[in-house]
Image (cartoon, rainbow, N blue to C red; front, top):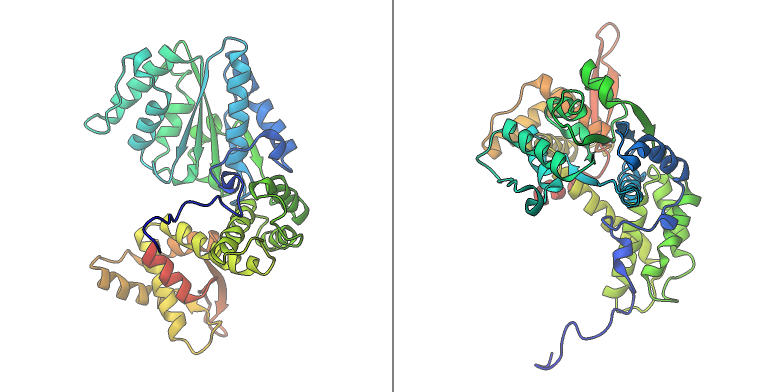
Length: 398
């Protein structure tokens, strides 16, 4: 390469607006496909906030990629704009409960999101403040700045303590705020999440419950077509979008997966110096998406869940049967070896069984009950959904 040649000089030959294919992108309403009923239900649940009233608290359930976060962000943005026309100040705080899982972290982030120190003269330090002090600052911020605060708690099931939900859902009732009010939208992949809550929290938090179903192949195709202008005109082969939609439809109707595969297909075409996104790139894009999904999903798990996955992967690699189902006791033994290698103490087997159940819920492993023989009862057996080599690599990079 010459001294004068640049790596970044030429315009992108494939993408016109790649941001349309990012998960973080919040599309216009006409690009939200197959969720009219869900958007209407959400709007009806929180519409009182438009005129300064208290919105219903909402719990939304559904598998990954069914539009829960997207619809929540879109409808609350629409609400803030509609409320402003009525001179009602509504603001929205979005909290990723995987990142902010403790009560203190969650309340500090909520207070930080709602705060405007030029208006409130309230500071939110990163540390050195008690949880109760963060609450006091939050209540003050709400009363000084807002008529209504909407809090989106994404992956709400990752919160370590119900107390934050109790405090937020009962803030107005308990007189913590006087000139403002609050609403909560909780989002979870776990359909039975509500069963884990104590009765007082359950009654105040779960005023409206909605389940988002998976997308079908036709809806996925429409979603992808609505974002096709992410590419330059004429670069997409006609068969690319139907193939991507079919692949994603087979795997729980995950729109996020479909959009990622489409983006990866374009990136692979670019890497091949091809001026077209060809259908043969889709399979490679699918593999790349799987690796990225695994790394992201495993990266979100507790360390001991990663050790369990590595232990199960090692057991399956050692087995002569490629479809081997490994008893939980054997998984535990392999897990102990991994813990020793990592220099940490293993958890008790009862807690390990709970972690294995969580991994099964996340579709990282499959579990079945298998009889030991006549009169000998049954035990749980486990198997990785993905290849052991992929899991080990994902655990290393997570």
